[in-house]
Length: 77
Image 1 (cartoon, helix red, strand yellow):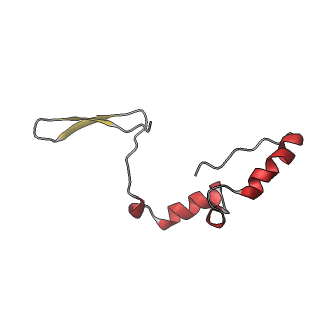
Image 2: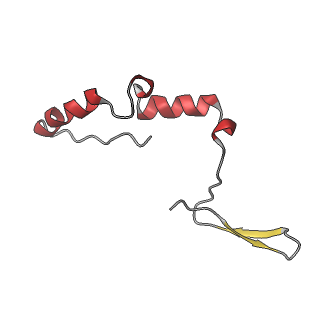
Image 3: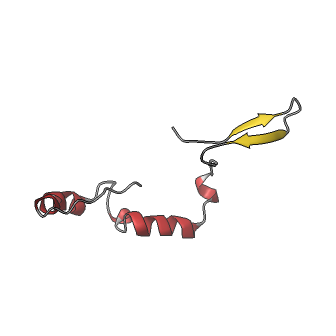
């Protein structure tokens, strides 16, 4: 579950304070800068637009990396 700030509001709906461990806020996809999306794709999965959601090249490379003791994480996109 995503951590979103809890708000304390007055009877008339005015936000009095926010309490949070992580201050997150939902943002619609349309409101995200294309530069942020490009940066995320570049760091997480540079072949993102070339596969259907599962990068077969990376999947087939897993045994080779395991045999050679090189652990790698998976994309979080």
